[in-house]
Length: 186
Image (cartoon, rainbow, N blue to C red; front, side):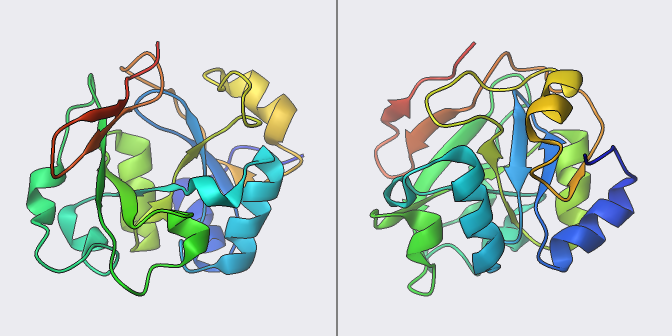
């Protein structure tokens, strides 16, 4: 079973191709480097998620998204608040794997304002995959003890911290139109 470990050690695990669980603005997430195909496939397996659906990338700041987003997208416009986090569907860079974007032309990205998730991105020096810690179609984890019990044996480490202040998964919006694709969950 994975136990909570210091953030710098978790970042080393991510950089080495591992999978971590960590708190975000609304739910616990499962993450890895987006270019670590084995780790991405492991997350998809843990979640029993259809790879065609795609995954979200979070970043500490806009510069961490530049290699993932198509040129011409002003990544500085992708910030959102902790109370109302927004994940944006933006045009993906041509090099983005279908393991990340699924069967979509766009890519889901969020500049996180959660202090632990943001610090993890900074320490890993990269945007990271961020998908909710749940089996697809089941409730997401917002309790650290439940997270450890359900996923601790499936990930390389758990980063301690509380979710919040949002009450659930982020809203997803299309960057071009502003249209809500998925409302925030509570």
